[in-house]
Image (cartoon, rainbow, N blue to C red; front, side):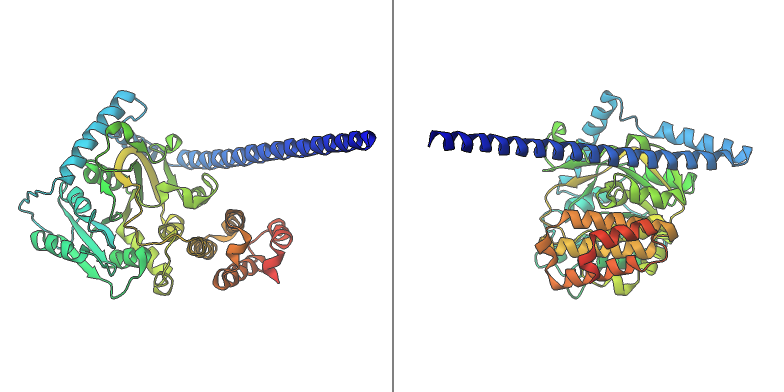
Length: 434
């Protein structure tokens, strides 16, 4: 009996040793994979930077001098966030501006409204009675006054419609569109773009606010002087608008992008490849000013049949996939532009996993359709991200399963997808090919 007990303990120790070895091997593989992905992304980014530099040197001497002067002026305008004192001062000024926007007492000036304003601010509004006043205040308090505010009421059930109508009575720059049913923010924003009259567009969520009073002046100066299609800027995240400045956090840091103008074809590749999964790339979502001509072109290319479908997850990313493919120039500047309120309670989307999955599949479909030639291969990477990001049972929804299967088959039959990627598809997505 004692002999059997010793053999049992010895066997258990052996099994435990094997388990630990497997665990260590798994950790090593995981670390190696993480390093490989980071290294790959950095190498890819370095190549893009090199191409941009080479393109700059191919310019004529006069063009280079002109561009250098404009960039130098822009860098002087752009605040240096690397300096802690400057950052603290900017946050304090931003906090004062937020407090002013939260103040319900409104002081209206006499505005000279042009038939065609310089910029349009587009806000999808859905059940946002608690936040929409502050959002509008943050626009009206800007130093720059030549704008229009387009509010798309997405069939709100609370007092949103009543509030925005009262604001419209006091300010002729406000336009209101009422959806006859809840259509989601993708549809609402696209409709707002199509009726806009400004030369540039600032997208804004109904629960976000502009952070400082000179963001319109600042960004438009850079966009117009450098003839840029898109200007991106920094954002602050807060859980409560009345938080202390020490609780304000940067929504993201992209120090390597500061004051770097990116042109096509590098722009479309950069948008997809930066940080691996582009839908997490906040600078491409809403922190930006966009040339209206480009934005309208993109919405028309997307087509009403696409944005009329109720997409309640990653809806802004859909437009940006096309936007960064057709825009010719983009810059990211060191300037705090908006405050993103981390509530989510007034968003026009719901977030069950089945809905999130449909949104990601829709983004994948659009990414493939609107990417250029060999860039369509990035759709395979996104397909892997989607497969890894969701559990198997979440694909059992008939709509999501059929949709994902159709996309995988489209990728597998595409003449633009490389043979190497097709082998990966046949190996790892065989379930969706049958």
